[in-house]
Image 1 (cartoon, one colour):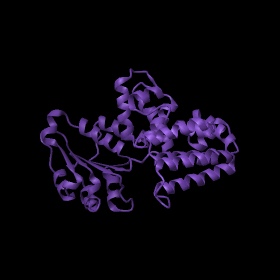
Image 2: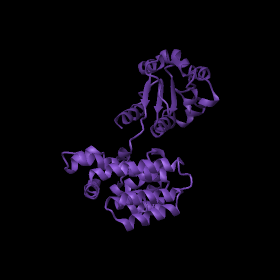
Image 3: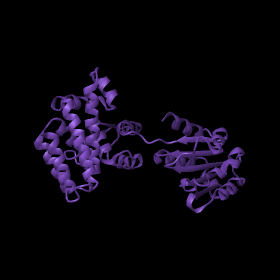
Image 4: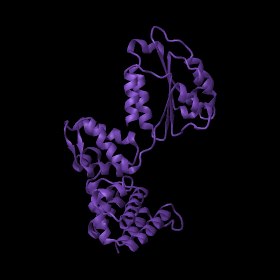
Length: 334
């Protein structure tokens, strides 16, 4: 975040680089920085003649360089944004000559999503000297809830840990998708609201009672009735509750529980740090550890892996995803 804030501050101060090469697995920040450049570097009267958007699949490196060498008209800079630049990956090294000697009045932006430049090659080193390289890395799942808290905090909202976790477990780690849902919340909830599970259910459509978070909690507490009620709901609503996600989250939970059993220091903060979870959730692991000793946890991880194989149609094509989930939960609880 500090790196992004610095980039934005420099752009606001008109401390511009001739090349911005935005790359990496997480497209959210690539789009944010690119959009900020597109919206703020030139004023509206300058954009008509001096702002160009090109797309990687429809152009070539040679055409981009030719446009980048053009001088601005009645403005200090021209802005050239290449979206979906990853489509140029086979020939991107042809940019080296321009990167060595870029046009100082051009702001050339590459949105190079889901890929990165090879650090060993000349283009990476050239842009490092004359421009700006930014790698947008995918957040780990245990980092996303904190990201949600920061985003909402910046807009004068707070969020309960359970509500943030519901979003993570339903939407995964796709920041753009999560941000879209947060924007929905902001439009309907007044400032200074503390976002809770009911807000998530009412405005985003994630059930506060029937979700993977509640299933994990019910299993951890060995609440057989509640766990079965949730998996029956999942079976009836498979599109909103894909088995692959449930298996992944259960695997994460019991892997973390395995780590918990091995910890010498079981204080709340130490456990939270070791497991990569919010301290709010530590009691869930304390409770589950009493219900599932180390040997049982190891056995359950084996059950989960077996269910994962079955869900991919290996060896048991006749079992539905609902039946696979019911079988797995039964084995875990008994």
